[in-house]
Image (cartoon, rainbow, N blue to C red; front, side, top):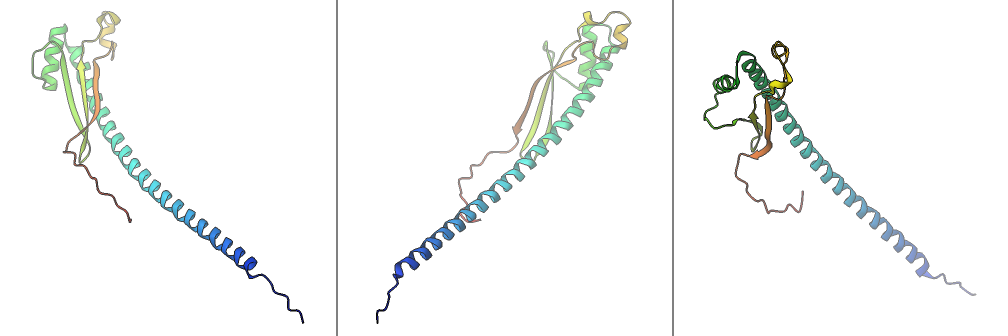
Length: 167
């Protein structure tokens, strides 16, 4: 009798190929999961920083609106430029007698950063309003010019050169 021999290598090569493909797919899945997890953590951190910044920005805008109301009141109750600047100095507590009035304030963003706002106070353009229009106008022109709106660090920076290999 002739016994027919089947080549074993054909069955083994298909099995090896399938094992290799499955290993590749598992590795790709693990890498994808790791990347997605890292991206999610990064997005959460960025969302937290962005939310904190906009909260601080809203507080600064409210403070700026209060300051503008004070400047409007000073403008309406003053008779000339000098009395306007004198009232502004008194109302906002600005010291110094240089030519330009600079008012600044800070709003906390988080424990290590703050939003610094600096404005240059100006006398509104009197040519935009005349006579009784001056009393009715809330903004004859700009009462101030924003010269600085930036994030500043309130703590020392320490480099973190450590690398987390396993998370």
